[in-house]
Image 1: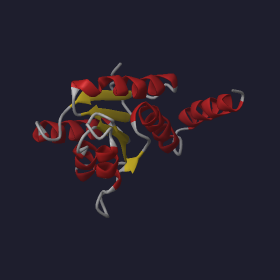
Image 2: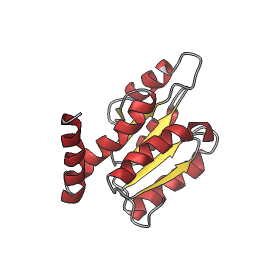
Image 3: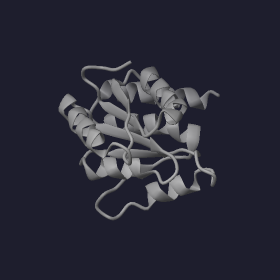
Image 4: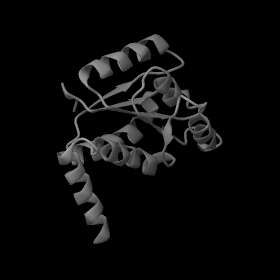
Length: 156
């Protein structure tokens, strides 16, 4: 589901990453957070990525979620082209099972930050919850939905 007034932009670098993106989107939909989603490679099509980021900002996006495996350049490249918060999701897609992705995302140079969540499916879901906590600072409806989710965890 794409929205005309998205608050979150979700991007991954390859169609092979879409299973993780679906987990992120599932949480965004559960919390009624409008989003857009795209597959754009930072390596293979950097100009298209730059244009997509600009378009997302013009639509009113407030948070970016960028997932990537291997060298995981995508979250850092997104952060280099926006001042908005960027949440990086490392995917375990390489022969070293994602440790390279984690290092790539957490070792951003000072001044170009990327938040990093857990590896794989836990991180895919937590990226959406983290986006909800950021958006909840200025959006009572999102904060209420996120709080209800957190309350539900206490009863499990």
